[in-house]
Length: 209
Image (cartoon, rainbow, N blue to C red; front, side, top):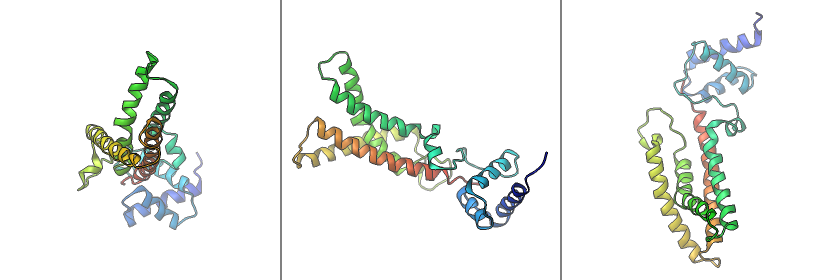
């Protein structure tokens, strides 16, 4: 089978950079390789993955290599982001369209409301602060939160933020009502979900080699 000379040259360059310049992350490796060639990021990543599959270099992290932010959003790794948005939007629609006495659908409204108030704002905030569990050694244990710790902190931070937002709303012309709570908590959650998904993607590109 014929070997593409350009790919062969890029392979040698990647190995030389790994051996001589000792890059610490995948992002750093790609940047160093591109300094010495005109190859695209996708071409470099393809060669790195091939070398990893052949056992010639190793990636110490288990995260998938993502070539772009859009590919990350379309991957399973971003499912939490879409679920968070779905909860916010669904709660907004259900709360406004289903009355408190409209049984049995009012139970769905109440359950979504509890998740929306007691979990989502704190989860988005914590996720934005501490993106992914990297599996890398760190002096800061908060970078490696367990699922239980994330859930507990999410509830605690949700209670704190809901109380603070309610206090602020109390001094505004809108006051504290269903619509103002829905709009303020939805905006808060969506903003921090966006921050979180960007930080999560950036953290996943910091794969150790």
